[in-house]
Picture (tube, helix red, strand yellow):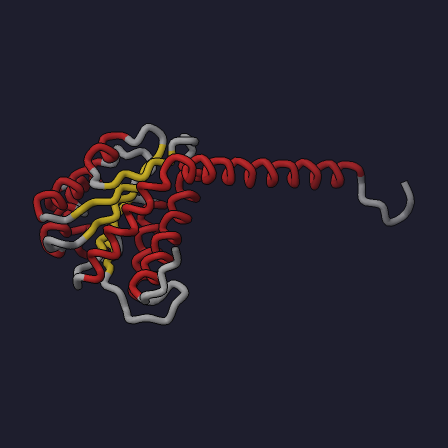
Length: 210
């Protein structure tokens, strides 16, 4: 070893890290490609539902727990602000952001009702909901979907693995089936959300592409 060469242990550590990075990227790409092959038609229908709701002056209601709550807030911000195209603000609300409502409902009615109670207060017939759960089994999400159906709100579900009860409850169920890892499922969910935002913008701006 000459002066200036890195110690062998450092070289091996970098190589192992790079190998792990490549493996993680490859796994994420694999899951997304599997989703695209299996769910293309469903994703198109999800775009249609969102476009129909917003074009008629209705809104998008989004909810989920943990990382899915972050996705709900992220996507609501893309609609209300903008995604890529300059256009009017689009009506969307994430039911994960009002800490006073969340804690009051959880305290008085139980955590399972934190989204359902808000759906009953805020959602109207003709709205569309984006219900996000990597397992499809989150009680708070399932109760909210039940409330959506009672209110005449159509439901798009983003879920993973086997889909859980959520998949069967949705008007459009988008299932990331190629992984059981929450991280891989969530990475696909946010891509799906961005695709919906992009295509909704194009459609509402009259710039849809064949």
